[in-house]
Image 1: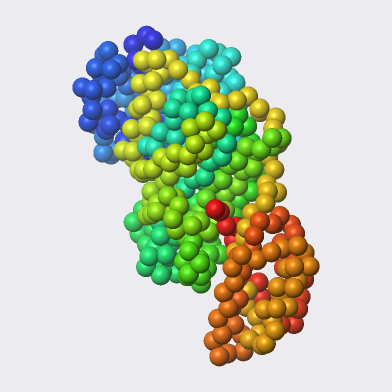
Image 2: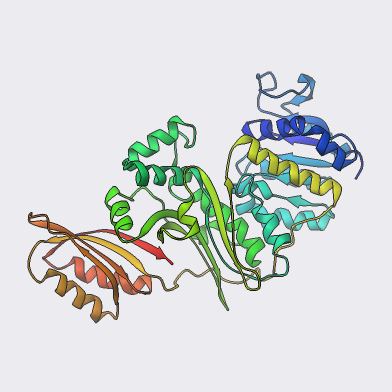
Length: 420
């Protein structure tokens, strides 16, 4: 390394957290680096904007060409989004600058190309902060579990949706009320689509898949379902049956494919993941030698994410190590047709024999039932809830289409995966 010279692209929440982490722990960081971290330039949209960070004003520029990459050791990208970040990082790598990024969308969509270019140019690309904020998920998979094959992983990778579901579970708020609280507290954007529809978690799962399974999927290949349709009724029935509902990112390595999905799921209240509440994140990983471990912490926030970025920067300057992943099966297909139990809630006519007729249809399709909840309200329509044993989703869908066509069934309200 030359002089620990870095430029920063972006000075928002994470950029501010990164610089403030340096100032907060400057003596420790410089002791490990063997000298100061030299921030030579900061690229921003508005150079004159007031910022809650202590940097000289003359470091800021709105012009990428003014960054002097020829005399830069490392570029820290904290802009977010695919463009212009992708173009800027390609230019930096071609100038043989190392790169550290916290950009989940960029790494999910363009990570394979950037990693390939970094390898070609003989420089490093690190991206710990792109998944899990300050939780060292990628480092743990690559270093702490280096002697293991990752068999499966299950995570809460989005703090916004976990906050919403926690409020619905604990305080019995509706989805709309819980979302409003998340927005008021700054956990959710004015347009929460990326979070509540599962895009954010899918990007992070795609990145983790590269290091856990050696598979670099297109995020569009990942089965994705959000939480907008989760109701208080589903929350309450789940609790009655011994489950909580969480938005889970699921990955499992099979012999010939990998299964990747992001979807709401019922998980036993006794599982460690079920205890992860509010805006916190967690990843539950199973290694073939190690067994099960869980990592937990703040999945977002300026200081937590900035801390992860700083750790990557220090790793480049001190040890010069890159992430290598656990295997090299990049062409392994993504397939999400695995067996699973399912929770099904429907409204039916409150008449004798309805439960038996529905159970017979399930039986005709070879679907066995684990649990049934039937509540008579003294009204014409009553709720009916089932949890099945393991079944392929396509077979379940065919059975439910036949069931919904019966005149004693008003509506199939919910179908939610059960994770055990």
